[in-house]
Length: 231
Ligand code: IPE
Ligand code: IPE
Ligand code: MG
Image (spheres, rainbow, N blue to C red):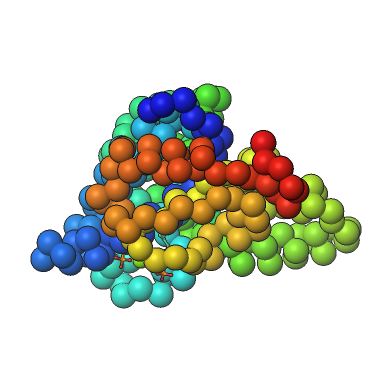
């Protein structure tokens, strides 16, 4: 890639697995399987390019209303990647953090997640946030209730510390694949000044080159943050 301004933090809304599979006359579960494979490929590439923080939307709170059969397949993939295939995550050599309410997962999977986060806790070069049963509105309401229970007013800095992204800089760039142009309850507070990039590619077919294109596009943007001149 030519000389460019790299985002520190990229967040992905990995959408389009089901449609990608359907176009290939395959079940939705196959799309999810290929989607997870692509997640490790694309996120590794992002870290290789020098991005320090990557956040992925793997499962939304609202996704829990999908048919049981599809949820079972999604939960199995979570079990696989934090269990037998955890090397795929650990070999990225970045700290892994899971955001969202994982109490909906079977207890052994919750334990596996804990083990993976502990095993990678000392990697300080990069941070990989995986959002599972995550919803931004739920996150904000939880933070408000926490502030109320502590009996204190918040300012922007102390409110941020009550969110699941406490201590993590906001995403500079949010990339959504799958052709939809919406945030679907993802990082609503943190996205206030994120640059948004929408790709028509379905997530399993989003390539390393597509990622580089998105970063190049970001690099050419003028982030004014409400001021008159960009940096
Ligand atoms: C994104 O792909 C993955 C999850 C939401 C779990 P979808 O499953 O939403 O795929 P489409 O949007 O139906 O194609
Ligand atoms: C957003 O995709 C959630 C994830 C990618 C995990 P959805 O497919 O759930 O979003 P909607 O329903 O099209 O808004
Ligand atoms: Mg979708």
